[in-house]
Amino acid sequence: MSTFSKMSTFFGFKPRRNCECRRSRHEPQRNGRDICNSCGLYIQEFRPNLERLKNLGPVASRNQLDNLDWIDTEEDLDPQLVFEPEVKSVQKVVPPSKPGLSDALECTICLDPAASPINHCDNGHIVCGFCVERMTECGLCKTKLTPSVLAERLSRQLDLTCNCPNFSSGCVVPFAAAEVKNHVKECYYRNVICDITWQHKCDKIEIPFEDFAMHLLSTHGTNLYTIIDGMRASEPVTFPLDGDNFAYPGASGIYRILKKNGETFFLHFHTTKKFDYLWVTVLGDAKEAEKHWFNLKISHTSDTRRQMEQSYTIPVLAYHPYAKYEVTTMFEKCVMIPASLVKQYGVKENGQNKDRLVLVLAYDIV
Picture 1 (cartoon, rainbow, N blue to C red):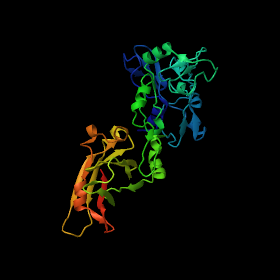
Picture 2 (tube, helix red, strand yellow):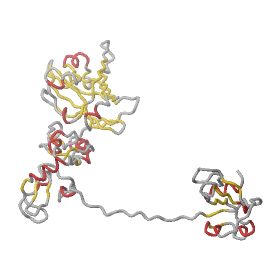
Picture 3 (cartoon, rainbow, N blue to C red):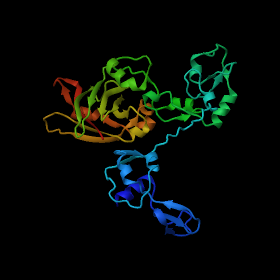
Picture 4 (tube, rainbow, N blue to C red):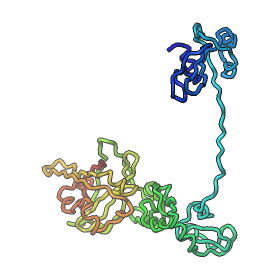
């Protein structure tokens, strides 16, 4: 492409042989102009005077070029000439936003969309169902709070949504404001009521879900094992026996905290006379639990002829629905270690106490 064609294309002055009316071709006229046979319009190509163009220097504005004389030739145009196009700034006018009806249904205390049951005061201040549990009067005007039927109907018709109060613990899915209180009762990330009596008794202390693992470490002395990909966490475990049965039926709790790839898991146990049940939960919801499986290998360190090694693979469960052992729901989700197996293959603790036998447990989460 010639320098003339490049400059013409840059400024939009494309040499054309067809008129904009597109009815007829142009015919050459004097002074390098074309004229349309149909509409009579003149269209002139971009041909600035070479000498005056050079005197403008390396940068010329389009306004300056408009005043140049026109010539019939385009030879010897300076290829280094840079043209600075005109830029017209357009200021966008943004209309002022108007508050919507949903904004009027925000709680005046937490500033979130009001969750049911929505209350209001005599002055119309809205208080959500969570904040109203902590007060009996409006926080702004100190007048009495009463349920608002109108606000409830509007909330349902507008299909307002709000975040779960357990958002900071991991529940990030928004729920309908009218149903969020019902959700909180079954939320996977709701606070934990710790009633563990093993090693240290908790008098049903309420603990934020994300802090529960730290509570187990600091208060109950629960050990934490980190599992690395391709490796197992392994330890000898002592099982107290009373004859042919386990010595402490009814004992239950969280035996170990397991960490893998940033996720936190709990190894639970529940003991009866004949069996010790083990299962694993994750500090998360059911979708997170479905991603993982727990593999347990049981062996012993005896050098005798009685060799034993058994492996089990069970699904990982969400914490809240499976924090406690239930026969009807967890029978097939646990590893059952019989007291008879411990008695047959367990190694005496310190080689002396026959009522405290040791097996080796190796953990892996996949």
